[in-house]
Image (cartoon, rainbow, N blue to C red; front, top):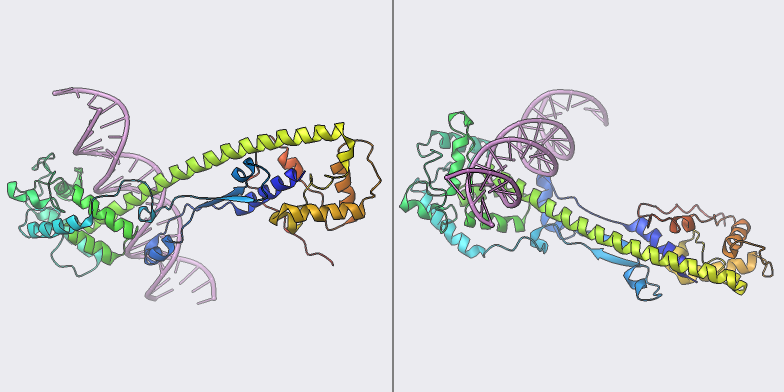
Length: 364
DNA sequence: TCGTACCAACGCTTTACATCA
DNA sequence: GTTGATGTAAAGCGTTGGTAC
């Protein structure tokens, strides 16, 4: 007979505690705090108890669904982790060594000082002025064993890496935008960096660009795209979670409604039960007990009905719960008539967005 | 203290290109 | 060799937060 009350409690919790965080840290200061905050990121869905009640009449009110963290470094199951970075660092050395030979057209300006944009522009200027910037002068299928900057193939021929093609959009007015494919090592290194922090401050960007022999703008764009991919994946995961939760709750709601109908039918057959569940089928949202546990609420409701409502007052018709609860509400001004029963009987499932009414200060 | 302009970084969307079946 | 689908680097645009005045 506590079924309705438990359901209402769960729904109230669902409306109050549904938390779905999809935001990501942004801006530089957010990047500073990313390490601390990302560990706090939790996407939690707290619905009314469904799985716990499916197994029986457990009073456990809620079930917590903790979604996957957004940042891959926090355990995101996609995509598969890249190869260890130790190899990448070695490749990076080789890459830098190769870059000193002047093969890589993505080579940033030699000096790391100055503002980021200045360096970016300087890099673009350097690239545009480089005679090695011919976009079509490299074989696109020759990148399989390259170092970080893909320059391991440099001895085989200048500009043998896929990452060299970016230069073409900055020379001759940038009319032709040549597609760049980062080497596997570069991508792996960037992935490792992304695991540590999904956003970059200018210093990190410059260091990464220098290490990978890319332009800072390339690193920035890569991180932007990577964040977008992460968000897209997370959105898909969240959508799947929500879909499953919705299906489960819908099924649970259907089952509970069926059970409620059976109980009501039972009541009409056996009027003796009319007194017992009088207050359990209607929940007062202004009662704090309701939100915490069903048992005290039931007890208090029973007490209220026993004191306010005449014990020997059989209703002439309708559901005893409604009449009795109305009588109790009339006797106790603090208790407003509940609208949850109507919500529960709604065929539209559960009111996820229903926020519980604020409890007015009691006069007593 | 408030309003405004400027700048940098970001997210979102689109485009263009490379790759693969 | 051609073609469509897919992945992704890069550009464009608007938004936002910080800073200087």
